Image (tube, rainbow, N blue to C red):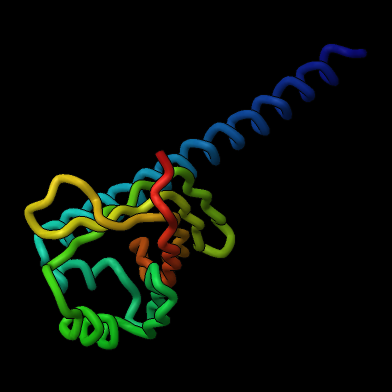
Length: 154
């Protein structure tokens, strides 16, 4: 191998490795942005601030509740929450995984959720959830969420 062919290979590998590390950095930056949105959404729910919580969703967001009710859009979600009977509750979602697709500007999140009655320290319900995020607007927003209530696992 000549010096020039070795130099070319070195530069080529350097460019590839730099591209991969830049891509990884970019992916991590996007993942952290989604996690920040999730944390802010959880806080809005804890504060019973539905108006603020709606800012983390697309207008046409789809939500499947833990008991299987499908809600289409922010307006319907607001009506659903206003019509709930019983004590006030909030939900906390704890992500286990967030995967970004940079080409489609979509992301997948999955984890566990817990529901708390206002003032309580222990959850009264919980289970698994998955969410689809979109960044079409320049900000990561929830496009879809699926919650499944599951028996408590000790």
